[in-house]
Image 1 (tube, rainbow, N blue to C red):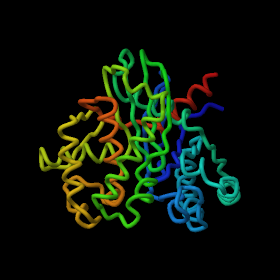
Image 2: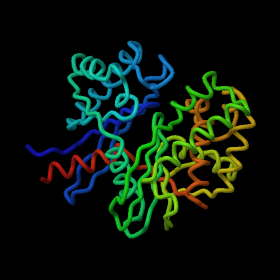
Image 3: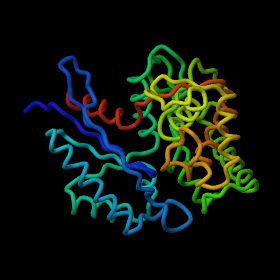
Image 4: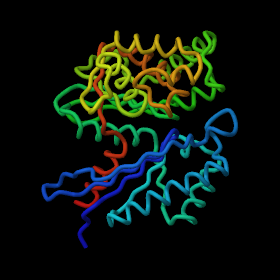
Length: 314
């Protein structure tokens, strides 16, 4: 029986995303519905993202149950993929079994390099980067994925355990910015990035692409400063190193979450963890000697859909 619709669930550390797509006769797809829920998986117990709490499990089940009902409404074949927080949790099996028992959803935990490759596939679909040497950066809640793509194919894919939720938990536990915490966080990021020899920091890139929440939030704030209007479409929006520096300085001057909430273009549910995400992006710009980055609205979930399409064809 032919499949008309597909659903992809990205079970991230900071949030769960669902997209539902309708397949076209030419093999492409159109997004017909989407949902997002902030969850902060693995952030409530312990110093690291190593334990998913009972409350988080219950919340995940509630969200996934709703996502499943929406997928069933469209008669869409669904695939749920979990990333950093589930990948690292000591009670991973317990969490996955609890989700399956309550929802019937089989959670697929993917490795970091696979996650990075899927993100690159999503970005390729969103932007014209097939014939370019591209660095793709995706800052998540638990990890940051880097992909170097050349002529449409990934040359390397690396997942680094630095993410906006992880570093907020470690350096800004009360979401308060202090000079000392910023310095410690920056050093931690640099140490982790510098130790990854696979990242090929000295490579010359034609194009830098950024995806997911932190980078989209930066684009939204820059647009608000420029136009004083909400941004309509993020895909293809570019910002420079100088513009990023303006946002970093602005956000870091707002020491509390409440103060950061007043920044125009700030996503309300990201105001607490945005400082850590910005420090990751700032350090990536410095290490890779980037002057500009372009936003891709497509990322992991669209990559999941593209991989599902491949499996259907084969």
